[in-house]
Image (cartoon, rainbow, N blue to C red; front, side, top):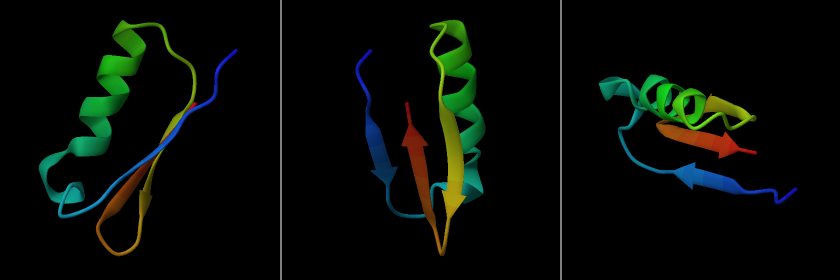
Length: 46
């Protein structure tokens, strides 16, 4: 299994970015997690 870690930077929390990534991952049957980081970043990890 490959592992990946992505940090999206900017004002991504305010536009539902984490929820959008989670919906796409579920649709593609990917396992992992999405986490809000401070102050405005999002971590996507598989």
